[in-house]
Image (cartoon, rainbow, N blue to C red):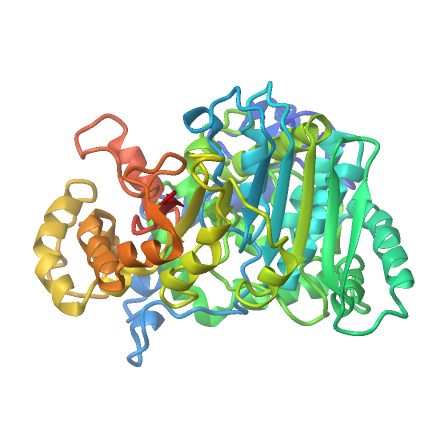
Length: 570
């Protein structure tokens, strides 16, 4: 079978007993989503491909179903809030683009030769760890000590599985393929499940040795590998060690058909059609829209036209039971990676954004696999609440060169005062490393500070700004359920004066005082990550402004996401 690293012939039509094994070189000139090895295969596959190639979603005239049917969308009915989550509130995929938390060249410098300690205190998935390691200068030879924590056992289990697979699978391409599908695909190939069997032996051996240990006891295991210089240590309560085994084998009675049905109950629920169509309508390029639709339908991250025949087994890292999908229907693999880099991928069919994400993640993971074998990296993973368990697990004397805490500093989570009090003192002091940085993320601050009065006062200015990117003809009947009008209204936040509202937030919560109490201060200018990474950077008339706007509009981000960096005061 052709490796998805190349473009597989898309011919897997009903007339073939098995997919064509040749490489695709002839692109469909109509949709630019698939490739074929020959005109013969393209003709043979047309009865199947026609449904997607001629899909309404691929037409610039496509509109959400509520507009076509002349009705009020469900998310505006019965006085409900416009954005209501649906599904379980687990966050197994990142909701912000991966970032390199070191940025050595702009901070310590590429010649820095001391060991570096990194803490991902509320890690979510591994994307920031992966991005940081593959971004290290080629000549980097100092040691890395990386502590990774999350309170959700599902996340910790998946992270340790991905790391162990990168160390235990010798071939980098095979490791990347396996980890990618365990990370994102509902159904996986049999060979991936076989690799989990190796880990089942590793974890099972630990469980056997701790069988007589008392309950509620933290127990650790360190693995070293012939293929690399580093190590992986996992520290869990006894009960969580035993639970680890459930992430490595398919639950009894869970078939592929059943797994797809369980997932589809959330991702394609009939009562959520209007919510889904609202999201699809923000993706103004039709090819992006239909790729999003296909990924929602089959839940397998592969190039658009690549055969799915090898994906026959449920992914046990998603299913610990046979009847529950773990995430909300808004979860999207694209949210965790920088779209400008993803869309710049040039392999595969021209407009296949699923293929671009697949190739990007696969290449990134292959690089990660390679760097792990060349670097001295010591990982420690643990599961716990940052306020309670984590301070007990961290070495009391440990000081870090970087601490990344995601958005636990938001007011509806831990808050900035408690976050700084917990982690500020754990930064290396200035005399040891003046570049040591605590990275905090605020996802809810701007929205939380924007009152209804503010929205009214800012409306005309925001509409004037937005119309330069997204022209709008006001419906003649003043219909506020019009799809274009709703898209325009929800996009106004993209041109909001976010600095005004974030400054208000900082003043109200006394960021300066909170930092002083914790022995840290805000950097005058971030040196690791853009303060507003999702904000529009180009003015309307600049080259590339239209493309940037459309990419941001369809990304699931709004531009209110704010990073603040902190350093020790002394």
